[in-house]
Amino acid sequence: MNLESHKPQRTLADFADIATDWFWETDAEHRFVYFSDRIEKALGIQKAHFLGKLRTSMSKHTRSSASWRKHVLDLKAHRAFTDFEYAITHPDRAEPLWVRISGRPLFSADGVFLGYRGIGHEITDERETIAQLQKTNGILAERNQELTETRRALERSANEDSLTGLLNRRAFERDIAEALGVVGNLVVLLHIDLDRFKWINDTLGHPAGDRVLVKVAERIRNLASGIGPAYRIGGDEFQIVLADNAELARARWMADALIDAMDNPISIDGQTTVVGSSIGIAFGRGGQMTPSQLISNADIALYESKRAGRGCVRELTPCILEQLAARRKLSSQIPNAIAAGEFVPFFQPQIDASNGKVIGAEALARWQHPEHGLLAPAAFLDIATEMGLVPAIDRSMMKQALGFAKQARAEGLSLPSISVNLSIGRLTEPDLMSDIERFWTDQKCALGIELLETTSFDELQQESDVSETIDRLRAMGIRIEIDDFGSGRASITGLLHVRPHRVKIDRSLVQAAVRDPVKRNVVSAILDMTRALGIGVLAEGVEDNTEIAIIRALGCEHFQGYAYARPLSAADFTAYLRQKGKRPKMQTAGPMDLPKLA
Image (cartoon, rainbow, N blue to C red):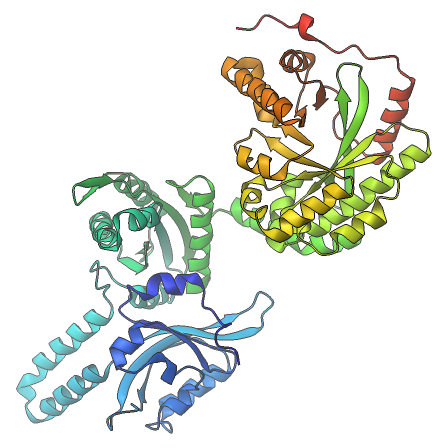
């Protein structure tokens, strides 16, 4: 068993240093594979003593008890458990140490049991205290009140967050289970996450971050007072539970008030900072929804608030659930769609405005979906990226696009070049070169590769395997192109490293140049730079002759956009090329046709 390869999710590491309890994980065989550092301080035993062992091998005490038998049954059934108490044999002491643990099973996306994850804390002193108090109570009945108060103090300590004084995760899980245990009871959950807490921690330091959390907790406590209990569940995440047939309107009011409160400045060590927050709201009724479902729904709503730009509230609605269901359905269909050839290239011509001739085309992926019709990348690209399937789509597009180019030339049509998009994932695949050799059989039609994901490309291109791949592509006679240049994602440093044959000026910059003299100057500077470096340039996204004329006046002659043609299916593009071969030279607006600009 390779313990080093089993790494807990980052959230455990984020919370481990500030938690009052320790975190633990086991594998599918119930052997311990992870403990947070807190266990060493709590028990005085090195983590290594436990790693790789079963819980049953760590205790020689009370293993025949009813609680142990129930616990073993829970583990075999992969059920969650709470507050299981057992004794640990200390390697250097005769007396056992008592601990109390709670855990929940982990499953993979396809339902395979992976192990357990949970929390624990040491209760030896608590048990000894309780035992002593109970013994004393049997002798002196008058001390019954003292015993009761001591017990309450111990329980309160176990359920409070030591930093903020709010209730902790343990209390949260108990309370939400109780609230949903009442059939028909409407329970509303607010999940609050701080937007800029990591930045505060990184720049001002962890002590300052702790003081920010204390102040944030005070604001949450004040707003939630009398409405519902507030919890700090770890790190910079908080929950508020509204139970007893809660009112949604009140929860929405509270969420808006919290957003405003978190936007108020916080002064720390003479420095003023604003932390901000995002909030997700979900609700459900007892008997109809489990605690895990309600928590998951609040997480989804929080994700939507962050996706909307942070600093806002989002409530889980039927519309969001429908979108998620549709997204899950699409994700399940993409692998088969690739195999079935449902992803097809559409071609957008690239034109030399000086003579109206086609100088090439870009192959753009479309999904010919059997139910939804033709889908553009916006409908599937993010999902395919998450699934790691973009390289497979790239491969299919290259094969089909080059096959089309070969057939077009065989029919006597003029298509000097074809450009295909290539993701970074595809760029690093070992079979890329062999695929190009197999697919690119008619090299009279030049092949251009447009590099996408230029944000990460500035970093990846410095890796030896990526740089080597680009050099090999260039040696094969393939033209390297950078897409969306000027969008704020592609840098000049990356441009110098890649040394492309051509850059494509982003459509947003091209269209802005029509209205904004400053943006025109930016386009002009890009053209001057590319000329100085000997790099070709094409302006994409042009929609009319006015835009073409303005960009031509700056010195660009090659264009792509709706002004010439929308992306066309293979059949329509074939007809387009035939028609272009018959037409006389198209007159395109030139510098003398420029309208007067403000």
